[in-house]
Length: 173
Image (tube, rainbow, N blue to C red):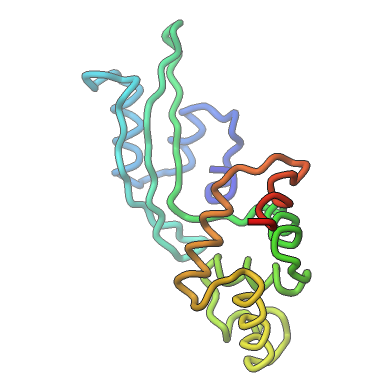
């Protein structure tokens, strides 16, 4: 929410509803959740498509209700879009002996950039970026973009501790 909508994680449902404006599906889902119009509010979930005009992209959101034992309700909104955490730079650098430039290229690709986009962003040429991508594949043990993206997203979802102990363990596997 903070990344895509600029809403603090401690924001209220009212903050959400004011911010999302006329997006009918998301608004309806949240209103239904908080109105109690579901058979089982603690297990209620919707998959909602919204358009982020500022980023010019579609978002898929999972909107679910969670009710505490005391009856307080919370909306849990998860996005299918991947947001690169700065912590991942250190994890990939440590686990695969990647350079800062290589981790930057991984981030740009995972965020949806083409080779041309990466070259433009890094003020480099396409041939250099392609060479760096080949080096990344070699260091990560992947052979193509599909394997690379699958491995990258898999590593990103493992939930490493901040001390990066697991990144060192991954390097030995």
